[in-house]
Image (cartoon, rainbow, N blue to C red; front, side):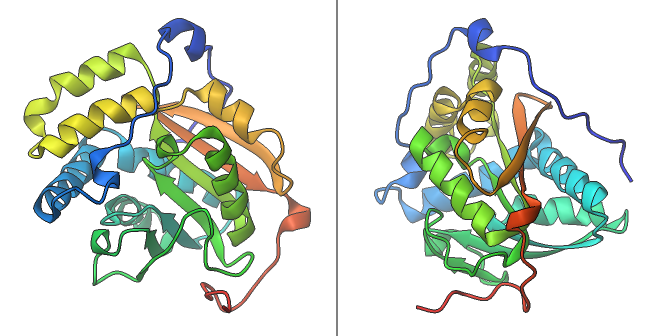
Length: 257
């Protein structure tokens, strides 16, 4: 297996960066984004995740869960999946070390999903699955799209659907991170990626904010682990309490209407 990632309470990013969170809707989230730009921007995201820490962060979070639980095969629901690149790239790396993933994609926009993947369009805040349907519920670059109350709602809903844990891979808000986004404009083929990249950093959370939001009021949560990763990535694992875990078979049953 890969070297164990250290999980810890991060230093006080909030007081160091002096950059207030600013929530601005991203073009990719709107109905006005042209289909061609949507596809180009999603492909930009795939490359950025491969090159700049997105895939590695998710891989390490899944590896952590596999190490703690002893599971070598994990069912995973990827929320706000887009093209579903991140969990599948992570799965290819993990497969070389004996860990396999059974992945289902979910996104609110049907056109974001890939036909060759097991996928469905649905609301991340009202997941259409029975309790404990997947070992893991995962998201990448989704948390910063949510306001604090929505983020807590998503975490609670994801915990309901998971058997082991919820993993969150997202950006860390920081002035240097914002500067790196501007510097990376030439790598982005879509103007949507450039505009949304800036908005994403400005509306991202810092580890202390995430810990404060997720450590209180989630009845099914046992503990929250937060780690920092390459190029201002944050990894979060919200572990489901033993009392809330239920084994359900078969996996991935859609809840009855």
